[in-house]
Image 1: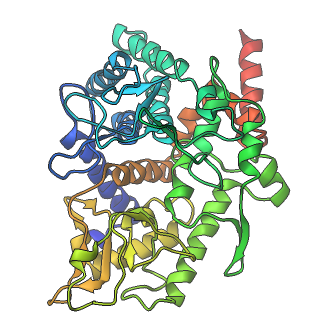
Image 2: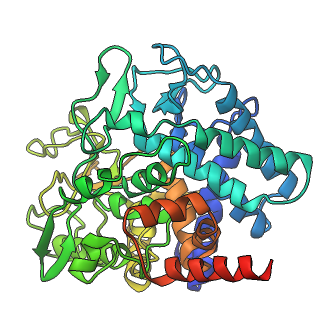
Length: 444
């Protein structure tokens, strides 16, 4: 571990990005291209993790980590599965109205855990399909089929249905009870969802849906930082894994004279300041040990006699500064912050790995640890196994930091550009894309 932590930044990131990518290589079901939620035994599929895998394959080809034909083969396995999946919406189906249940059986591909039809996780899956389609543009039967499948699956999503006639998109639906009783309200990772829903050429959401969402935003001043509040770090990461939000603004951000990328940078400062102040006096918290996000955590059975008063939350979306907070930190959320504040994120991660080397195995970060909940040898609680969402966001945000290549690739997706424009985004690369498109039409 000390040797890894002394590598130059690019070599350090290369190792960690490759370790994250290998999660998809190691865990994919070769029969259907599906990827499990975690590396633990009998883990179901997370449809969002499949979206991350589909997005990672093209970048892996560019970096020489996977042959192009193999990446196409893996992508087609997943696309064929979702095309042919049961869309009846029954309790044992795969999806409904073009959306998919959050968790699926890795062998049959049918719903498990009575999970909801997830609008946001379906959006991340679709984003992965569109990423693959944007990259695999060769005039070959396999790549042509890949593009056609991605378009078919995007077009069949009934985004308007997901509104249920309400002002904002609903968070989910279940065959047993219908729509969940809450919508996507308050700033969240749903920016990607709204952009894809607005850009749909077949079933777009209503024009007033996006402003209805931003009307629920919460702008705050925390630790001398003015920013759009979201406590867990992952909220600032997930949409920006696919969308380059640097320098483009919707009406809300125009009014605040900021943008979502800058907002992510300010979220890092808020996190660092919170752990430096350490209001609950958790072990390990300081300006170079932060990262409160959605992650696994210890449960009550693991507290034991050494920490009888510690209240723990298991898997939860931990956030700053309002909680919940039980001393559990997410190293992947620190690494995924590298595009926003590279010096701060890398300094923190190197510090955490030197202090707690058990956080890394096979160059792959664990989802979380809790140094307050230590064993008799003073070793912190560490979440077992690995989570696919962590490995996916690590891979994509490192790539965006190193090359901006995934962002550039998705700039070429006309549906995504249309969705951003319908949301009121303007400026920066979005205007340049309009100019480039016009120039291309003139040249033809």
